[in-house]
Length: 152
Image 1: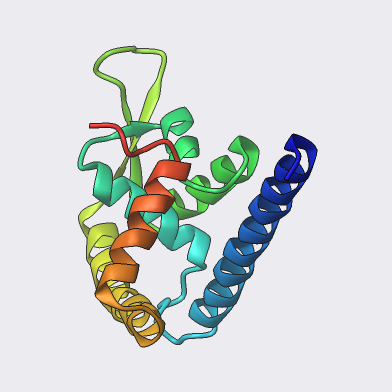
Image 2: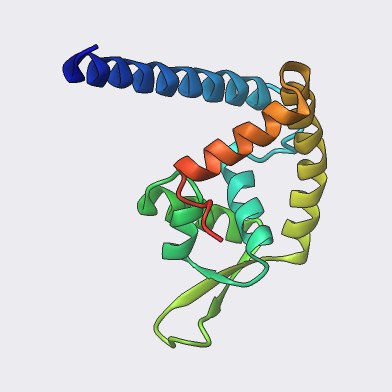
């Protein structure tokens, strides 16, 4: 096998793997979106609540952008809606008086936990129906490596 053939084969393999991962993501996200667990929130709104709850400390908008799949302008509008609903709050940064930080309110945390339990059960059911425990560990490990999060 020549170097050119090997490169082409690995390129094709990489693209096929990407397409399969994207298909799995799209299929699961569509399935989860159809479930009646969101309690009047969109999946993106839940994602913001989840990210803030998981952080355990207030985050600046620019730090929140890193944790969710939205542009900063779209995230800013979504945050405004969640603030109006009392699910998150804004506070002055303790490190930079010019910056604003976001935190999940007690009400927001209660909503996130209630939805999170139902959503977590749906995720577990979908993945354990198709994958063994060893495959789940491999999927987690490979996904973290691709995300650059496998560093100690």
